[in-house]
Image (cartoon, rainbow, N blue to C red; front, side, top):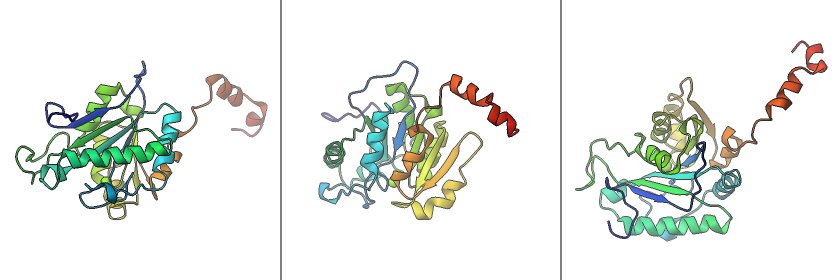
Length: 236
Ligand SMILES: [Mg+2]
């Protein structure tokens, strides 16, 4: 579609100014509806945008740590013909501006319009980019040179958490906002060795995830601790 960042497969792929890191960056993936903004069924009007408390704080914290913030959103409303990319773009621009006003920057946005009940050309039984499939996360990993194995996702639905697991992320935070309360059990069942599922009231709990914690102490410091007389005396 002319004028919008749509790739050859029809997926919205928008990367804002970004400086790729040489070693591969751990990213913070965020679902949009019910995580960054209050859940509104088929949100497509700017006047319906309500930022969830903590969204700007968390995004700004990631910005300060040079952790790319990547929005990944299923947009079956586009596929079903309820609204178009024009409305999606307007909502995105307003949301990004509202975050920017609070010093928070989204680094990339991915949106998938396909749905089993979509209208042509968006009818698809199980599109590889629609969560719970990992296609949007994999696109971001290629575009931003991300280290998915150290990345985390925040979502309200079990399908968000499953997409994180399918993409090989370190873990996901499932929040109570949006559809989160009734999705908790299904999300919990997705935990596996090597894939951690955490729970929080809202996106604000992202601040407690390892990806936004201070870097581990330098090895020298840890070694000094390990060999300290106090630790030995305690038999630890
Ligand atoms: Mg959601």
